[in-house]
Amino acid sequence: MESPVIPARPTTKETAPLSRNRRRRGVNREGLEAGKRSTRTILWILLAASLVLYGFPFLYLLFTSFKTPIDTIAVPPTILPKEWTLANYVNALGRSGVPASFINSIQTAVISTGLSLVLAVPAAYGITRYKTRSGRIFIMAALVTRMVPPVAIGIPLASMMASVGLADTPIALSIAHTTISLPLSIWLMSSFFEAVPQDLEEAATVDGCSRLGALWRVVIPVVSGGIAVTAIFAFLASWNEFLFALLMTAVRSQTTPVVIANFQTQFGLDWGSMTALAAVYSIPVILLTLLLQRKIVAGMTLGAVKG
Image (cartoon, rainbow, N blue to C red; front, side, top):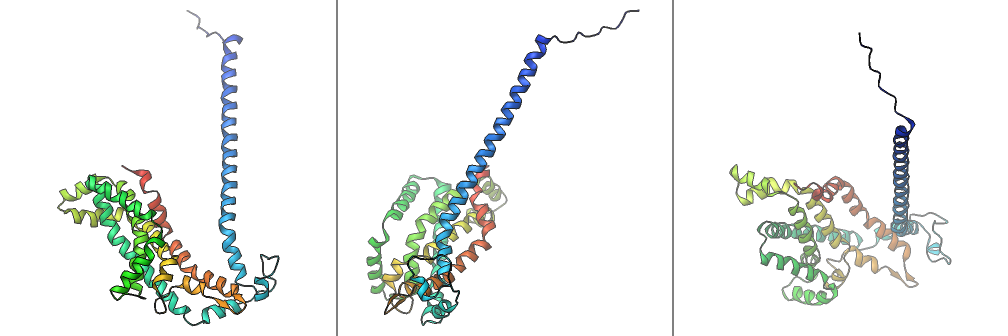
Protein backbone atom coordinates (compact mmCIF):
# COMPACT_ATOMS: atom_id res chain seq x y z
CA MET A 1 0.00 0.00 0.00
CA GLU A 2 1.45 3.35 -1.06
CA SER A 3 1.88 6.00 1.59
CA PRO A 4 0.07 9.32 1.08
CA VAL A 5 2.09 12.12 -0.46
CA ILE A 6 2.53 14.96 1.97
CA PRO A 7 3.06 18.35 0.24
CA ALA A 8 6.27 20.04 1.09
CA ARG A 9 6.12 23.14 3.20
CA PRO A 10 7.20 26.36 1.54
CA THR A 11 10.67 27.38 2.41
CA THR A 12 11.56 30.67 4.07
CA LYS A 13 12.71 32.07 0.74
CA GLU A 14 9.23 31.40 -0.78
CA THR A 15 7.20 32.84 2.11
CA ALA A 16 9.27 36.01 2.44
CA PRO A 17 7.97 37.69 -0.78
CA LEU A 18 4.37 36.81 0.19
CA SER A 19 4.66 38.38 3.61
CA ARG A 20 6.39 41.40 2.08
CA ASN A 21 3.53 41.87 -0.41
CA ARG A 22 0.96 41.62 2.36
CA ARG A 23 2.77 44.25 4.38
CA ARG A 24 2.92 46.51 1.34
CA ARG A 25 -0.80 46.09 0.70
CA GLY A 26 -1.50 46.89 4.34
CA VAL A 27 0.67 50.01 4.14
CA ASN A 28 -1.05 51.06 0.89
CA ARG A 29 -4.48 50.63 2.46
CA GLU A 30 -3.45 52.65 5.50
CA GLY A 31 -2.04 55.34 3.21
CA LEU A 32 -5.25 55.48 1.18
CA GLU A 33 -7.37 55.71 4.32
CA ALA A 34 -5.16 58.46 5.72
CA GLY A 35 -5.36 60.33 2.40
CA LYS A 36 -9.17 60.05 2.38
CA ARG A 37 -9.36 61.32 5.95
CA SER A 38 -7.11 64.28 5.21
CA THR A 39 -9.08 65.12 2.03
CA ARG A 40 -12.34 64.89 3.96
CA THR A 41 -10.94 67.18 6.66
CA ILE A 42 -9.80 69.76 4.10
CA LEU A 43 -13.21 69.70 2.39
CA TRP A 44 -15.00 70.23 5.71
CA ILE A 45 -12.70 73.15 6.53
CA LEU A 46 -13.38 74.73 3.13
CA LEU A 47 -17.11 74.16 3.55
CA ALA A 48 -17.09 75.76 7.00
CA ALA A 49 -15.07 78.73 5.71
CA SER A 50 -17.46 79.21 2.78
CA LEU A 51 -20.45 79.01 5.11
CA VAL A 52 -18.96 81.63 7.41
CA LEU A 53 -18.03 83.98 4.55
CA TYR A 54 -21.46 83.63 2.94
CA GLY A 55 -23.60 83.47 6.05
CA PHE A 56 -21.94 86.11 8.21
CA PRO A 57 -23.23 89.15 6.22
CA PHE A 58 -26.79 87.84 6.47
CA LEU A 59 -26.41 87.11 10.19
CA TYR A 60 -25.00 90.59 10.73
CA LEU A 61 -27.98 92.06 8.87
CA LEU A 62 -30.34 89.95 10.99
CA PHE A 63 -28.71 91.03 14.26
CA THR A 64 -28.68 94.68 13.16
CA SER A 65 -32.43 94.54 12.58
CA PHE A 66 -32.88 93.94 16.34
CA LYS A 67 -30.59 96.79 17.45
CA THR A 68 -31.59 100.19 18.77
CA PRO A 69 -30.86 103.24 16.55
CA ILE A 70 -27.83 104.10 18.67
CA ASP A 71 -26.37 100.59 18.37
CA THR A 72 -26.73 100.56 14.58
CA ILE A 73 -24.30 103.49 14.20
CA ALA A 74 -22.01 102.62 17.12
CA VAL A 75 -18.24 102.82 16.55
CA PRO A 76 -16.73 100.27 16.74
CA PRO A 77 -19.70 98.21 15.57
CA THR A 78 -20.93 95.25 17.56
CA ILE A 79 -22.25 92.00 16.13
CA LEU A 80 -24.87 91.20 18.74
CA PRO A 81 -27.28 93.94 19.87
CA LYS A 82 -26.76 95.27 23.36
CA GLU A 83 -30.51 95.67 23.70
CA TRP A 84 -32.91 93.57 21.63
CA THR A 85 -35.91 95.37 20.15
CA LEU A 86 -38.65 94.80 17.56
CA ALA A 87 -39.17 98.51 16.94
CA ASN A 88 -37.37 98.35 13.59
CA TYR A 89 -39.79 95.73 12.27
CA VAL A 90 -42.77 97.74 13.48
CA ASN A 91 -41.45 100.90 11.83
CA ALA A 92 -40.50 99.17 8.58
CA LEU A 93 -43.70 97.19 8.06
CA GLY A 94 -45.87 100.08 9.19
CA ARG A 95 -44.42 102.57 6.74
CA SER A 96 -46.69 103.55 3.87
CA GLY A 97 -45.97 101.83 0.59
CA VAL A 98 -44.23 98.78 2.08
CA PRO A 99 -47.14 96.28 1.82
CA ALA A 100 -47.86 97.44 -1.74
CA SER A 101 -44.18 97.04 -2.65
CA PHE A 102 -44.25 93.42 -1.47
CA ILE A 103 -47.27 92.73 -3.66
CA ASN A 104 -45.55 94.41 -6.62
CA SER A 105 -42.37 92.38 -6.08
CA ILE A 106 -44.26 89.08 -5.94
CA GLN A 107 -46.41 89.96 -8.93
CA THR A 108 -43.43 91.07 -11.01
CA ALA A 109 -41.29 88.05 -10.09
CA VAL A 110 -44.08 85.56 -10.82
CA ILE A 111 -44.89 87.10 -14.22
CA SER A 112 -41.21 87.33 -15.16
CA THR A 113 -40.57 83.71 -14.12
CA GLY A 114 -43.60 82.51 -16.09
CA LEU A 115 -42.51 84.41 -19.21
CA SER A 116 -38.98 83.06 -18.93
CA LEU A 117 -40.15 79.45 -18.68
CA VAL A 118 -42.75 79.77 -21.45
CA LEU A 119 -40.10 81.14 -23.82
CA ALA A 120 -37.06 79.17 -22.62
CA VAL A 121 -38.55 75.65 -22.62
CA PRO A 122 -39.54 75.48 -26.33
CA ALA A 123 -36.43 77.41 -27.39
CA ALA A 124 -34.08 75.09 -25.52
CA TYR A 125 -35.98 72.00 -26.72
CA GLY A 126 -35.75 73.07 -30.35
CA ILE A 127 -32.03 73.87 -30.04
CA THR A 128 -31.13 70.54 -28.43
CA ARG A 129 -33.33 68.30 -30.57
CA TYR A 130 -32.88 69.75 -34.07
CA LYS A 131 -29.20 70.76 -33.64
CA THR A 132 -29.17 73.19 -36.55
CA ARG A 133 -26.53 75.81 -37.21
CA SER A 134 -29.02 78.60 -36.65
CA GLY A 135 -29.84 77.08 -33.26
CA ARG A 136 -26.18 77.17 -32.23
CA ILE A 137 -25.93 80.77 -33.40
CA PHE A 138 -29.09 81.62 -31.47
CA ILE A 139 -27.85 80.16 -28.19
CA MET A 140 -24.50 81.95 -28.58
CA ALA A 141 -26.37 85.19 -29.25
CA ALA A 142 -28.41 84.61 -26.09
CA LEU A 143 -25.18 84.27 -24.12
CA VAL A 144 -23.81 87.47 -25.63
CA THR A 145 -26.95 89.40 -24.68
CA ARG A 146 -26.50 88.16 -21.11
CA MET A 147 -23.10 89.88 -21.08
CA VAL A 148 -24.59 93.29 -21.90
CA PRO A 149 -24.73 95.45 -18.74
CA PRO A 150 -28.32 96.14 -17.66
CA VAL A 151 -27.58 99.86 -17.44
CA ALA A 152 -26.99 99.86 -21.22
CA ILE A 153 -30.56 98.77 -21.96
CA GLY A 154 -32.37 100.13 -18.90
CA ILE A 155 -33.02 103.65 -20.22
CA PRO A 156 -34.09 102.52 -23.75
CA LEU A 157 -36.45 99.97 -22.21
CA ALA A 158 -37.95 102.58 -19.90
CA SER A 159 -38.48 104.91 -22.88
CA MET A 160 -40.08 102.16 -24.96
CA MET A 161 -42.46 101.16 -22.16
CA ALA A 162 -43.47 104.78 -21.63
CA SER A 163 -44.18 105.22 -25.36
CA VAL A 164 -46.63 102.28 -25.36
CA GLY A 165 -48.38 103.36 -22.16
CA LEU A 166 -46.85 100.78 -19.81
CA ALA A 167 -44.82 103.13 -17.66
CA ASP A 168 -44.91 102.40 -13.92
CA THR A 169 -46.68 99.06 -14.34
CA PRO A 170 -45.71 95.54 -13.16
CA ILE A 171 -46.10 94.26 -16.73
CA ALA A 172 -43.39 96.58 -18.05
CA LEU A 173 -41.05 95.69 -15.20
CA SER A 174 -41.71 91.98 -15.70
CA ILE A 175 -40.79 92.23 -19.38
CA ALA A 176 -37.61 94.07 -18.46
CA HIS A 177 -36.70 91.42 -15.89
CA THR A 178 -37.35 88.71 -18.48
CA THR A 179 -34.57 90.17 -20.63
CA ILE A 180 -32.21 89.40 -17.75
CA SER A 181 -33.38 85.89 -16.88
CA LEU A 182 -34.27 84.53 -20.33
CA PRO A 183 -30.71 83.95 -21.69
CA LEU A 184 -29.68 82.06 -18.56
CA SER A 185 -32.96 80.12 -18.59
CA ILE A 186 -32.35 78.98 -22.18
CA TRP A 187 -28.84 77.81 -21.34
CA LEU A 188 -29.98 75.94 -18.25
CA MET A 189 -32.88 74.23 -19.99
CA SER A 190 -30.65 73.29 -22.93
CA SER A 191 -28.31 71.40 -20.60
CA PHE A 192 -31.25 69.61 -18.98
CA PHE A 193 -32.79 68.61 -22.32
CA GLU A 194 -29.40 67.31 -23.47
CA ALA A 195 -29.44 64.87 -20.54
CA VAL A 196 -32.73 63.27 -21.70
CA PRO A 197 -32.24 60.37 -24.16
CA GLN A 198 -34.10 60.76 -27.44
CA ASP A 199 -35.14 57.11 -27.19
CA LEU A 200 -37.88 58.17 -24.76
CA GLU A 201 -39.43 60.47 -27.35
CA GLU A 202 -39.09 57.88 -30.10
CA ALA A 203 -40.92 55.37 -27.92
CA ALA A 204 -43.66 57.94 -27.27
CA THR A 205 -44.06 58.64 -31.00
CA VAL A 206 -44.33 54.89 -31.67
CA ASP A 207 -47.20 54.83 -29.15
CA GLY A 208 -48.97 57.55 -31.12
CA CYS A 209 -47.75 60.82 -29.55
CA SER A 210 -46.88 63.79 -31.67
CA ARG A 211 -43.68 65.78 -31.12
CA LEU A 212 -45.50 68.21 -28.83
CA GLY A 213 -47.29 65.34 -27.09
CA ALA A 214 -43.98 63.60 -26.39
CA LEU A 215 -42.56 66.86 -25.06
CA TRP A 216 -45.52 67.45 -22.76
CA ARG A 217 -46.15 63.89 -21.56
CA VAL A 218 -42.63 62.43 -21.48
CA VAL A 219 -39.85 65.01 -21.56
CA ILE A 220 -41.35 67.68 -19.30
CA PRO A 221 -41.93 65.25 -16.37
CA VAL A 222 -38.35 64.00 -16.72
CA VAL A 223 -36.85 67.51 -16.63
CA SER A 224 -39.20 68.83 -13.95
CA GLY A 225 -36.25 69.18 -11.59
CA GLY A 226 -34.42 71.26 -14.17
CA ILE A 227 -37.48 73.43 -14.66
CA ALA A 228 -37.57 74.02 -10.90
CA VAL A 229 -33.91 75.06 -10.92
CA THR A 230 -34.51 77.41 -13.85
CA ALA A 231 -37.58 78.88 -12.14
CA ILE A 232 -35.57 79.55 -8.98
CA PHE A 233 -32.87 81.41 -10.92
CA ALA A 234 -35.43 83.41 -12.91
CA PHE A 235 -37.37 84.26 -9.76
CA LEU A 236 -34.22 85.41 -7.96
CA ALA A 237 -33.15 87.51 -10.94
CA SER A 238 -36.43 89.43 -10.72
CA TRP A 239 -36.75 89.41 -6.94
CA ASN A 240 -33.33 90.99 -6.33
CA GLU A 241 -33.25 93.35 -9.32
CA PHE A 242 -32.85 97.04 -8.48
CA LEU A 243 -31.77 99.08 -11.54
CA PHE A 244 -34.76 98.42 -13.81
CA ALA A 245 -37.13 98.85 -10.87
CA LEU A 246 -35.53 102.21 -10.12
CA LEU A 247 -35.74 103.41 -13.74
CA MET A 248 -39.18 102.05 -14.67
CA THR A 249 -41.27 102.56 -11.54
CA ALA A 250 -42.42 105.67 -9.74
CA VAL A 251 -45.17 105.06 -7.18
CA ARG A 252 -47.71 102.44 -8.26
CA SER A 253 -45.36 99.55 -9.09
CA GLN A 254 -42.33 100.19 -6.89
CA THR A 255 -40.73 96.98 -5.67
CA THR A 256 -39.30 96.43 -2.20
CA PRO A 257 -35.59 96.92 -3.11
CA VAL A 258 -36.40 100.46 -4.25
CA VAL A 259 -38.43 101.12 -1.11
CA ILE A 260 -35.56 99.85 1.06
CA ALA A 261 -33.16 102.26 -0.64
CA ASN A 262 -35.49 105.16 0.19
CA PHE A 263 -35.32 104.67 3.97
CA GLN A 264 -33.80 107.97 4.99
CA THR A 265 -34.26 110.31 7.91
CA GLN A 266 -33.00 113.80 8.65
CA PHE A 267 -30.02 112.20 10.37
CA GLY A 268 -29.12 109.80 7.54
CA LEU A 269 -30.06 106.26 6.60
CA ASP A 270 -32.38 104.36 8.89
CA TRP A 271 -30.22 101.26 9.16
CA GLY A 272 -32.48 99.48 11.61
CA SER A 273 -35.59 99.71 9.45
CA MET A 274 -33.63 98.92 6.28
CA THR A 275 -32.16 95.74 7.72
CA ALA A 276 -35.51 94.71 9.21
CA LEU A 277 -37.30 95.05 5.88
CA ALA A 278 -34.44 93.31 4.07
CA ALA A 279 -34.66 90.39 6.51
CA VAL A 280 -38.42 90.08 5.94
CA TYR A 281 -37.89 90.41 2.18
CA SER A 282 -35.56 87.39 2.18
CA ILE A 283 -38.13 85.06 3.77
CA PRO A 284 -40.16 84.22 0.59
CA VAL A 285 -37.02 83.19 -1.31
CA ILE A 286 -35.83 80.99 1.55
CA LEU A 287 -39.22 79.32 1.82
CA LEU A 288 -39.43 78.79 -1.94
CA THR A 289 -35.98 77.18 -1.98
CA LEU A 290 -36.90 74.88 0.91
CA LEU A 291 -40.14 73.83 -0.78
CA LEU A 292 -38.38 73.03 -4.06
CA GLN A 293 -35.18 71.59 -2.62
CA ARG A 294 -35.92 68.05 -3.83
CA LYS A 295 -36.65 69.29 -7.32
CA ILE A 296 -33.48 71.40 -7.25
CA VAL A 297 -31.32 68.42 -6.24
CA ALA A 298 -32.97 66.28 -8.92
CA GLY A 299 -32.32 68.97 -11.52
CA MET A 300 -28.69 69.41 -10.51
CA THR A 301 -28.04 65.66 -10.78
CA LEU A 302 -30.04 65.13 -13.97
CA GLY A 303 -27.01 65.06 -16.25
CA ALA A 304 -25.13 62.60 -14.03
CA VAL A 305 -27.23 59.64 -15.17
CA LYS A 306 -27.47 60.39 -18.86
CA GLY A 307 -28.44 57.27 -20.81
